[in-house]
Image (cartoon, rainbow over all chains, first blue to last red):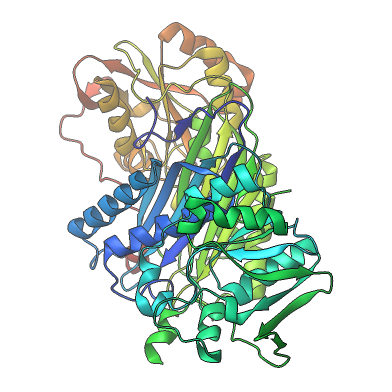
Length: 290
Length: 290
C-alpha cells in the first residue's frame, strides 16, 4: 500500500479516460487576511483548486497539498484544524488526499498553502479556444462582492454543473471565473480569436449589489466568484438553461460572441464606450489599508 | 490543446502502468539560504521532488509547480531566471512541465516554491515495508556534508538507478535519503517491523569527512543526500553491486536487517551502545546564526 508516509502515492488511472491536473495556492495576506482561521484557509484552497477541474468537466479524484507555516504561530492545534478542514473539504467533493508536504517557514512569514488536484473526465474538455461568432456567453451563479461578503472563503466548485454541461450541451469554450468577468472573459475571447458584447443589465448580481454602474463594476471586476463562464451555440444554450441542475445553478446568458475582437459592455441596449472596470488584484495587504 | 494557460493540464496516462505522484517544497531561509540564487532554488526543487520518484523506480513524466514570492525583491528578471532553470532541470530529466501557479507574497516574506511530480513505472514500487530479517542494507553514492559542500543545491535524483534496481533486482524496500540515514532508516525499519545493525566503518563518506565518529555523525545525521536506501536479499545484493550502472552509482552494503527492532551502530565490529547522532533539521535561519 502506497500513500501518505511513503515517498510517493501510487495511482491507477481509469483506462482510456482523460486525466486533468491543476494547481493553486492560498497565501496569508494575499488570498486571505492575516490571521485567517485555518479551516477557512483549507476550504478556500480546496474550493479554488477544484473550481479549475469543474471548468474541465472533470470529477475530482486525487489531491496532494503543501503547507509552509512559521513555527510560533502555528502549533499542533492549528495544524490539526487545518488538516481536518482540508480532509473534510476533499471528502465532500469525493476526492482522495494522496499526499502532502509540510515545511516550517521563518518566523513572521505568511502561511503558504498549495494544492494539486487530479480529476477524471468522461470526455475531453472544451478548453478556452472554441468560442464561435454567434455563440451566447453564459455564467452560473451570482457575480461580485465575494470578498466583502466572505463568500470567497468557501467557494463551491461547480463540479456537477461542469460535468453536466460537457456531457449534454457541449459548450464551445468553458473556464472558471476566478479573477472576475472583466479579466477572465478577455482570456477566453483571445484564445478563441473572437470578441464579445456583454449586457451589464443581464448580469446576475450578488446580494447587496445594485443595478447601477457601481454594482456592475463589482460584478465584473471583483474576483473569486468561482462560477463557470462558457460560450455555446444559442439553441443549445436555450436547452441548457432549462436543465433543472443548471437552472438551480442560475445558468444565464449575459452576452454574445462577435467577430470583432475586444470586449464591449452595453446597458439598456446602448454601448458604453468609455466604461473601464478596474482589473482585479488579490491583495489583502492593501485591502486592509483601504 | 490543454496545458499551461488553460485551467487544467490534460494527461493521457499509459495504459496499465502505475502512476506515482509526489510533492515537495523549497522555502527560502529553510531549505536554501535567504537570497539564494533563483536557478539554485529551481534546481533543488526539481532534484528533491524527483528523488522521491527515483525511490519508486518511476520515470519522471509531468511536473507542475507553484511560486509564491514577494513583489519587490523578485522582479521579472528573477522570475525569468527561476522559470528557465526549472524548465531546464525538468528537461534534463525528461519531464514535461504541465502547469503552475504564481502568487505574490507580502513584502519581506520568504520565497516558497512547491513542485508536484507524476511519474510512470514499469512495475509497482516496493515501498518501505518489505525489509526482511537477513536482508542487506545498501545505499548509493556518498553520505554527509551536502549542506556544507553546496551539493544540496543540485541534487541528482537517482532515476536510472531506481528503475534498474526495481526492474532487475527487486529490492524488498526502498526509499530516498533526504533527512539522513539516522532519521530515514528507522522509518523503513518501523514500516517493515524489523531492526538493523549498521557498520559505521562501511559508510561511503562524502569528500572531506574523516573516518572517525565526527565524520560518521555527519554521514548519518546530515540530510539532503538524495541517495537511495534499500534492503535486499544478500545474494541479489551481491549481483546488484556488480551491475555497471549501480557500481558507478557507488551501491554498497552498509548493514544487515535483524529481527530485533531498533537501529544499532557498530564500528570495527563493536556495538556502540551510547552513540546517538543528532537528528537532522532543515533550518538555514539557525545555521546562519551558528
